[in-house]
Length: 138
Image (cartoon, rainbow, N blue to C red; front, side):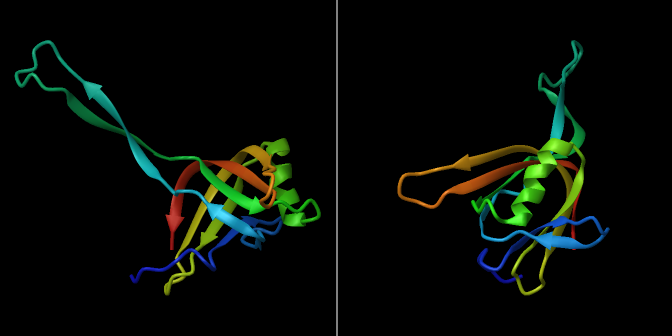
């Protein structure tokens, strides 16, 4: 896979029609897509090595943040703003602009919504999505 830049990447939310997605406009940044695994430390009184032993635990996907230009008239922003109030898991999708058009699809809950108002820069709106379950890459 060749290197590429983020320009052209699309972030989408599943609409009321299953498997149909609505693209969000004016995205400034999509945060890290980070997968990790919990690890349990195990030690025993009779351990002969004297070293901590590890046992693999559950896998997890960290919260994902997105930042967009704030536009109170944008209906797609209203979708995400509404998601924090209804507390329902929705499906989201990131479509990268690489040659293979890699897509990551995941379910999540919007857990925070914020508006930043700098003095001499554009006003932005940030969303945090708690990912529920695995991310599927295609």
